[in-house]
Length: 234
Image (cartoon, rainbow, N blue to C red; front, side):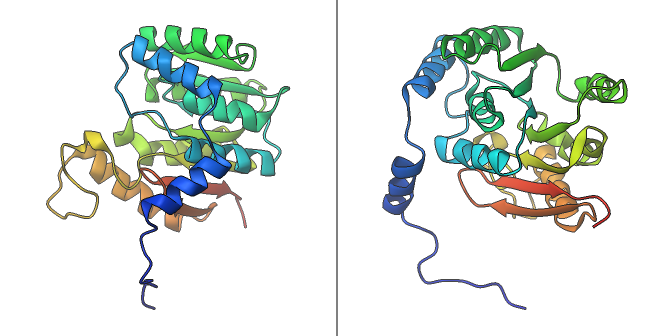
């Protein structure tokens, strides 16, 4: 079967701007988080855009998510959207490797009224996985949603680990599955690309697409957002 191509692909920037402005406008809380990121000298442009965040919020609400986990906090933009998705009674655990970023995000999230909904933990993403799994094994509730946005070279390992902590019917999100500014000019589809993150993301995308326990798709927005619905045994 061939790949469907439209003469209108890709969508022009004015239509994308229209959608973003209408459905996911920048708000005061996001502006404050961005200001905190700049004050803490975080890399510019690494935070997710509102359209990606609103999509995650929408899908979290659709499954009734109350507990979310993310790897990669930065200034808290994705934590903000996940917190909207889990609602006032929900909780978000966010993992950040940089202590100064974690401190800035904690303060910024508290400043926008989400201090009681988001817990930022300091540590390297993959190094935290065993402790998180141990919490679930000890009786903590499984996560309804997981967002991968750190340690891209380990995305395939995160995919295999996720079922240890994700509930059936839960969602796995992953950012930068199509592109990233940090890939030193290399691209996902160039066979000569040798960046370990690109090689890992190729494996992750193929594994997610064919995984027997996930129904998945990549949404071609911003840097590429993978979405997988965890349905073991289906």
